[in-house]
Image 1 (cartoon, helix red, strand yellow):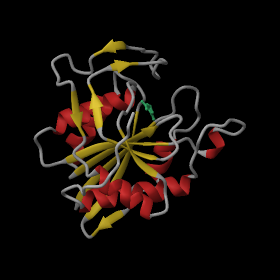
Image 2 (cartoon, protein in one colour):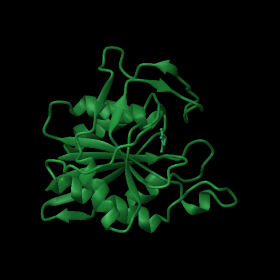
Image 3 (tube, rainbow, N blue to C red):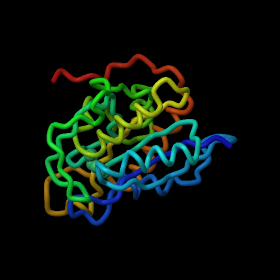
Length: 213
Ligand code: PCA
């Protein structure tokens, strides 16, 4: 049995739920194809513990692919991340009260790591499943970017492909505000399409998906 590891985060910043975990937990145990199963796990939202938690899961489960997910407050679609940068710059404290400003994720690490997932094929598949999606050119500078960077660092040079997806708020988290959101069912369907396509697409397709600024 091969494992595709999906992670979501615990709630942060006074939220009671984190849609990334609510969505990926619904995919725990789903068989992607014969002999390939999704395993979903939750990560803490803290700079000190999230990356170590993820690398421990990789050591324990020996996944064949890893896709981490998190809430992107203000995102309106399934945002497939292109790149993780070597910067922590937290606007708010994490769940352990830590708020690094302009520190490197890894002092001797490269400036950035690209995802090794087929992001254009994934965006196309999510849209074909009827769910809004786009390539995102930044995963921010908070815990998600840090975990994404450490994930790519841990698996650099290996056969195990990996990357990161941001999801929007759930509708019940934004009642009374203009902030964008997505129904949980759509999020789950979109993530499932993204994960299946990532698994089945070793080389990305060439599709327009950039931004002017
Ligand atoms: N989103 C935050 C951290 C945890 C999460 O779900 C982020 O985008 O950095």
